[in-house]
Image (cartoon, rainbow, N blue to C red; front, side, top):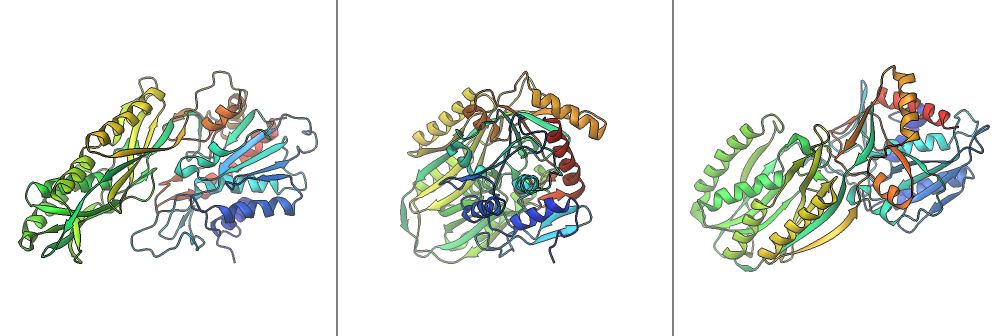
Length: 484
C-alpha cells in the first residue's frame, strides 16, 4: 500500500509518491525524464524530450478554452540530495522513504524533494485529467533538469516550440506569497593548488564540525547561521597559532546552493601535540555554540585520532589553504535598500573538496544587482590570483526583474482573495528561480511563482505540509479556470 494513499488531493499525492520512488538527484535525471515521456505517451499527449533530459508536454485547452492563450506550467525535476551522517541511503539507486505524521510529510533521514517534486505532481495531476473536470487553457508543461546545480536545464532549453507568453512557476516554498522577482546567480569554483611532502613519524587527527543547521543558501542565508566549512577554517587557524601541523585534506558540504552542515579536515602533527589540539577544539566548541545559539543549537566540534597517511601538505601549502579559506568572503554582502528584509547580494561556500593536488571551493554567488554579482566574482578571482589559484565559472543566470504591468499577477491576486479572503504578499526572493532565464528567452513573458508551504528545504529536515498542498492545489485550479 502506498504511504500517501488516501491523502487529499489524492491524484496529486499519487504522482508525488511515484516521483519519490524514482531517484532524481541533480545530474541523475534520465529515469524521471523517461517517466514523464511514458506518462505523455500513455495519454497521447504531444511531448518533446531533449538531450539534457528536459521534457515539454502539450495539452489542448478544455471545452470553452480551446482558443484561450496558452499557459506554461513550469517546475524542475531534480532534487537536492542531502542526508544525515548516520544514514546509508543511496540517492543513485533508492526511492525515498516517506514518513507521514499528522499534517506533515518528511523522508527518513534525507531530503524530501518537495522542492520541486510538488510542482511535477501538480502538473501531472492536471495533465492526467481526461474527463474535463479541470478547466484550463492550452498547457505547455515544462519540466527542467539540474535547477539545483545552476539551472542548467533551463539555460539549455530550446524555447522556440513554446507559444505561451504567460508562465506559472511552481517553485516557491511559502504559501500566501507570490514571487515576482528574483536574484541572478553564478557558481564559482576556486581551485587552490598545493604541494606535498612525506609524513613519516607523524600523528594524524580528524577535526570535524558537526550538525550545523544548513539550509538553502538563498532562502536561509538571511538567518546568518553557521557555515560548517568556514567554522572549520576558523578552528584550523586557531590550532595553527598553537601547534605546528601539516594539512592533509579538507572537505565540507555537498551542494553549491546548500549551506554546509558538516566539514572535516585531517592534519598531521608531532606525537606530543594532542593536548594542545584538544584544548583549542574544546575552547572553540564553547565559543561557536555561544555565538550560534539562536541558529545552530546542535552544532559541535570533535577531534579524533585518524589513520596514518604517507604524505601531507608542505608548511607553505598548509598556511596558504587554511588562511585563504578562513579569509574568503561568505554570507550576506549587502541588504536591499529598496525592499525591507531582502538580501541583495550574498555568496555561500557550498562544497569544499581535496582532489589530487588541489583544494576546490565551490561558491554560489547571488545578487539582484548584476554589477554586484560580477564584483564578487572579481573579488574571488583576485583572491585566487594572490595565492596562485584559478577560478572556474559555471551556470551564470540572470535575475528576474519586476514587471510593472502584469495581467497574471493581478489575476492571481484576485483568485487568492476569492479563496482565502485576504490578499497575498507580493515579494521578491534572493534565491534563484528559473523565471529569469525564461523571461530572457521569451520576450514579454508574464510570470509569477508560487507554491505550498515547505520548511527546511535542502536539508534532511525538509517538511511538506499536507493541508497547504491541498489549498494550493485548489488555488492553482482556480487560477487556471480564470485564464479563459
